[in-house]
Image (tube, rainbow, N blue to C red; front, side, top):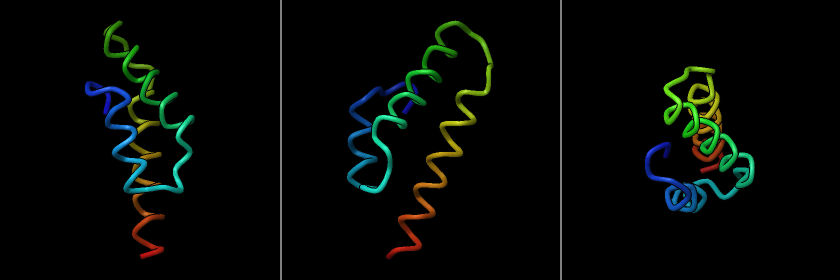
Length: 62
């Protein structure tokens, strides 16, 4: 998601429609900026935690 951009965010939203699309894009954008600047401010970790939370919620409802 970090390297692929917003197209992957749309695909993920199809899998987890309850996810907050704006929040997800923001997390991905911030993680992408960290990679570009070669910094580690924890943005990637926040993104993956949110993704895991959304996936867990989607699987719990199925």
